[in-house]
Image (cartoon, rainbow, N blue to C red):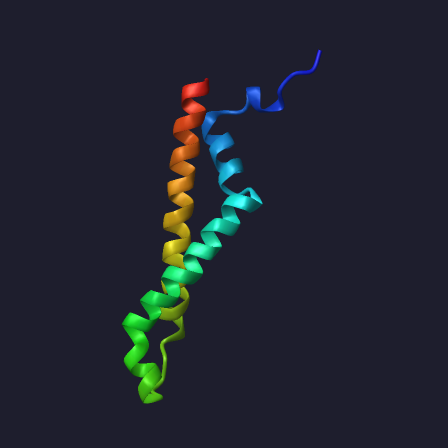
Length: 86
């Protein structure tokens, strides 16, 4: 008889594992690229057009925020789903 290895894992662990699976992480990366680019253009577009110095830390963080928001949304959905199954 085969047992389901995920049956012994907590809903939290299953949600984390599902959140960082490649298809979900890939979707979060795409969202981060699109939203991060738009936000960077809004926030630093005048510096880009003027040829002024760009704050690269802000650029990086502007891409990180939508990635983490998207990932957290996926995590929350997976956690709620896993909790209902237990």
